[in-house]
Length: 407
Ligand SMILES: Cc1ncc(COP(=O)(O)O)c(C=O)c1O
Image (cartoon, rainbow, N blue to C red; front, side, top):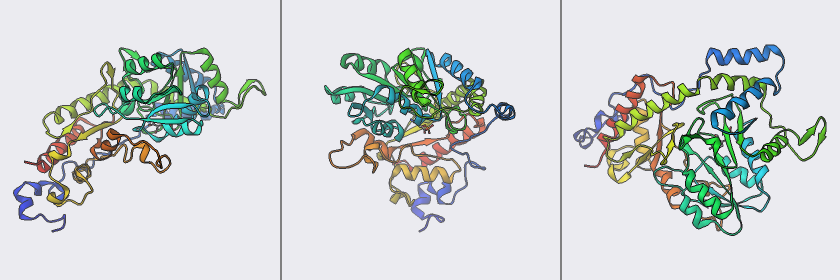
């Protein structure tokens, strides 16, 4: 029978209560995965710059950099056009063509693609199955005499095992680049992420914990690296129309920087809200067999850019048994949650080694990354959720997992 009507077997299991099989929805209106809303203060800040006519990087960009450096505990912060440019600045300052660089197979494409663009040879590393961040022991196994750097991501808002990365880097003489595009205001052992590594990169894309529209930042504690990245950002210009190296135009405009400054005024409140939402969802998940809340790295303060839930597929009936069309258990759960009115997202549908741009003869696929492809999904955790909406996310998780669990 189709999904609109339930069979007797489905009714007997209580499946008929599921909205995906014709039952009533948990949330009306739907609870969206993301919400991007600028405040009046953000808009006024941008309009102020627009009215001034001083649109290019200027006093707002400088103020944004100073405040961001202070917030992240770094000596220097250098604003740029987006998080991808930030990675290019970092790699441009630290990586030479042909250099071997360790990189997790589970992150957004740009962490790795900008390494490739810099001419690096990527050495793929697996991730920890619970924190989803780089597995430092695997990185240690994969490092060779030719490895010069480790590039890794504070993924979903969860800092990597920085102690482990720093030990490895010290033992092997590696540079460290942390991609913190998803981790503004996260901290490790009580310090901001800018306190660690050679360079840290950030993104202010609209869906991130804070935004400028489009924007990015690099932080560093090294004067020389800061100087090189400033030159790379702006045509290698050492003084007016004198160019000491090949550089780009990756500057952030003052309109974007003014929005960034306004967002900095409330990043703490935004982060508190995300953490509170995450705690409520974790309480619900603690009562559900087969679904697992994200685990923060030891010593880290997570900022929940995303809320990834790990599925144990064997704890649930198959899509076929449920009568729900889906390729796997994770997709079945997402489909059922979506029908309940709860948005879901899969970050990421493929590990990087399976992306057409990287896959090919000799590529080393990673076991945990491969498994996460079918066992991870995200539910809404953003700061615009009302208490009622967070409760609806929890109710829907309990309802869907309860009906579909294998008895
Ligand atoms: C981990 C990570 N790195 C890099 C980026 C690239 O940032 P942007 O979109 O600002 O270029 C993103 C953003 O999507 C990201 O999530």
